[in-house]
Image (cartoon, rainbow, N blue to C red; front, top):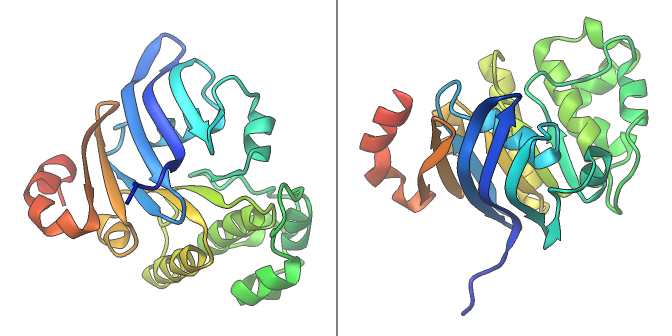
Length: 236
């Protein structure tokens, strides 16, 4: 039986912020329907990898393909329209706009984008705050809104950067439940996460980064055998 071809593939990716060389030959792949987690300490290059994939970091070389389409030469708005949904660490919601307005803004990129009614069934607390501006939302509500806004677009490949950072345990649990639900619905998810215990319950495969390089990769079935090296990489 042939192995499934990756839906998203990064090969030998180098990236720079100005003259600062941040990524050094990063290679990783994600198959359709998988949840893949990128682990690493602060400064390992995890966020830069996601920002490079979507084109926020422009000084890059190597290869980035989505369903075989070369993304490296595309402007950022065309990368999004290719079907990549990006939820940045800073969430990026419009603070002066209401929840309803934040959800109305994203264009539908593909068939299957969720309606606002579907969004509110998944996030009932957002419906309760639908008239509230972004500045009045809690951190957990802002994170849910950032994810919900991407689900409106119809993108089926989601890049989530530190979705649990700074959130209460009950909200972390709800985000974990949401990721599991999206996986059952056929979404492909790349999760950047420092919370290893959270990620371990969700991922099919792991890539570990250190100093701008992928230094280890393994499937969930190998997790117990890799705990010693993960302690060294992550300090968990």
